[in-house]
Image (cartoon, rainbow, N blue to C red; front, side, top):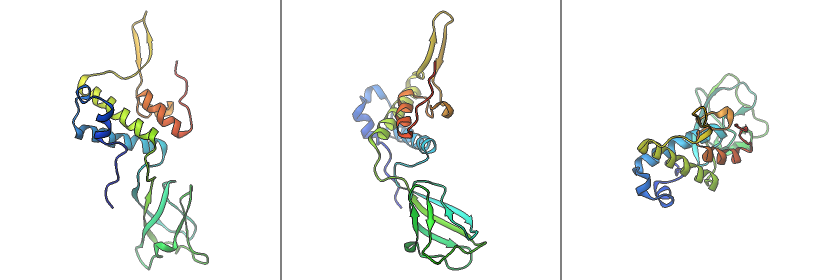
Length: 195
C-alpha cells in the first residue's frame, strides 16, 4: 500500500504563511506534520488518513477485537498452522472493530493468527488540516527563531511567566493552545480551565 497523503503538505503550509516569515524547508515542514500526525492519532485514538495495521493474537474461540476502533476492513488473515478464512467473508462491526465471522463458524481455539487491516478515514477534516498546519508552523518558528511557547499565565510583580507545554491530562497534547483547541473540538471534550 502506498504511503497515505499527509494531513497537510508543505505547499499548503507555505500558501498560508509567507515563506520568508517561516524560514523552513519542505522537509522540515513534512517532518513537523508527521510528528503532528502521531500526536493527533495517539490523542484522539483514530487516524485521519487510511493506514495499515497488523494485529497478532492467540485465538480463544471468542470474538476478535482489533486494537483500533476506526478499523475499516481486514485485508489478510494468516494462521501459524491451518487455513485462515478468506477476508471477503469477514465483516467489521463499526465503532467496535469486532471481526465478525460468517454464521455457523468460529475462530479455532489456541491458534496464533495475524490480522492485517486498514483503518482511518479517507478525507482529512478541515479542522485537523488547520491544526496540522498550525503545529508545523509553530514548531518551525520555534526551531528557527527561538520563538517561545504560548503563555498560560504571567505575573508582572513577581516576574513569573508560565508557558503552555504538552500535557495530555490537561487537554494540551501539543502544548500549542490553538492547535490543542482544534484537537479538543474533534475529541468532543474541552480542555480544563487553566488560571
